[in-house]
Length: 80
Image (cartoon, rainbow, N blue to C red; front, side, top):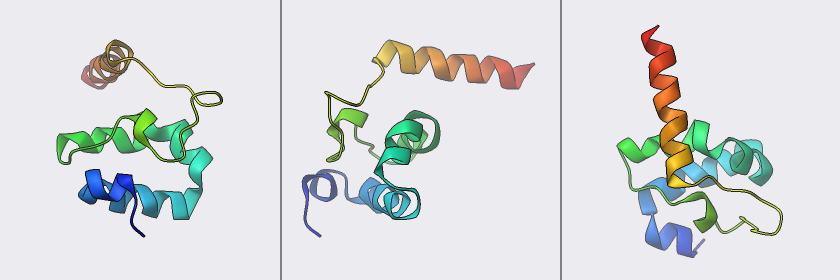
């Protein structure tokens, strides 16, 4: 399947499409920041709003600051 996601993020697309197959698009959108976006440490990951099934009229995204704050809170929690 040729699509923008696969063209722009070939390594990440493999994981994203596999997760869509296993859980569905809605699950991926709901759990993107917690389950997939952290792969950005290893791979070039798209922003949530770059996913081909993201609909800005229905789905929400987090700002870079909100994502950073969430990950910092997780790090602090793990350190306790």
